[in-house]
Length: 188
Length: 218
Image (cartoon, rainbow over the protein chains, first blue to last red):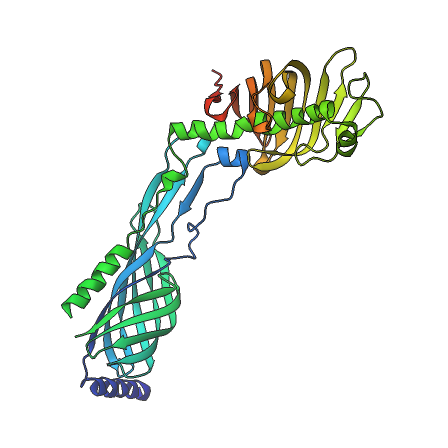
């Protein structure tokens, strides 16, 4: 019980300390490549000769993820929130040249929502800062029969720079949505 | 501020478009005919012509050149029992040329890796070649009989081929890319030993006029 009371008091102190500042932050972003760990992300095989004539191939483009995020400044250096990403990839089924049909393409629409925790470990948020993120959530695909899968993203380092209310950011990480992402943030 | 936000949104929307022209890899009916023709013209251009070029060389080269290019059994190539092997050539190295006894004709046999239609795979072939009239640059036109062979490729694919009816080589110039094959060749394609495709290739000389017809059995 003591621990719980201590935690609540600590949380209140953090929120109180942050109350002098703007608490709400939204961001728009674009990153990629999307979901490079997925099994369907593949490349055209290097068939030769007869195999190239008679084997169909398929290719799924990695695509980009565009998204938006909302964060609440829980403490001076800690933000919690959620991010939403949308990624469209194109899966092409390329028939064997010997049988002559046209290639068919299918758009794969992915929707990801992930709660996120951000720790800004360097700098003043008004102009320059370095931070790290951890996110985990779900990824749904707008196709019948596609299961909902686990989505995650870890960003060891991100850099943001700009003004008091508006700044650009770029971050490198690993996970479902991207390896590199950039965008802008607005404090409300 | 509004301008910056609008510019960023514009960049995001443009960057999110991810369009690729995949039809470049597949294509329509004309493309598939072209794909087949591009490959099977190689039977004429890459297997028959270079083999006959070796036979021509054996017949026309001077003694020093012949010694450099061939290993022989000691008999002149025009003598019955002659058996020459091309040992110093980029294409069809190892092709064996034998004089047909009692005829002005030679058999050509090859077994080994052979370049065809862009790739090199194990290939065997044989045919009998009889000279017809003399054509451009002193080269002969040839009548080809019993042309047959097979080729084993990657992915379990193989094909066998054999001529159907008259097959000729017509020489339109001294360079071998001006040597044209005319006639029908049957091709059977298999994958892992099972029938995959059956075709009739109508060699009409140049690539653009050669056609490939799929044989369907009911």
